[in-house]
Length: 93
Image (tube, rainbow, N blue to C red):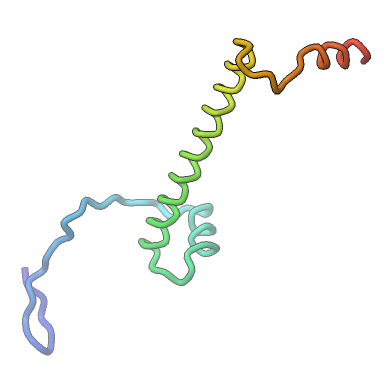
């Protein structure tokens, strides 16, 4: 397939990367409008997806750190939490 242009004829070269279809629903349209920064919609969706992935990774990391902290408390490997104070405060309720 070729595309005509005033300065010559060009061959159509498909993208070398796979593409996906994304439905622009109300929520995504709002996000693209708010955070797109004047970029093309495809670039805005790309950037939002990458930032979303970073946010999900950070959330998962915080969850794992929290679970590890609780595991250390339970095993008595962390002395930053005084269970006797908690027991006393609970008894005073």
